[in-house]
Image (tube, rainbow, N blue to C red; front, side):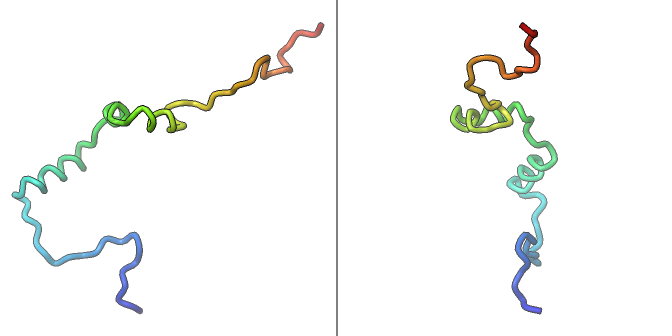
Length: 74
């Protein structure tokens, strides 16, 4: 087998992690307490929101009835 890392796997380091480091505590807090979806959406720009299909549904620009089977018989 080659010594190349497998894509998608984190590289292991033997360096000890200083758990008293404020940067480490901040990252750990973000992992344990992620922002709410509302905060995330409010932080996005207007262009990002309008291009997101889960936030803004696709608009149908057709005039007239879309369901012809619901019309009354004339």
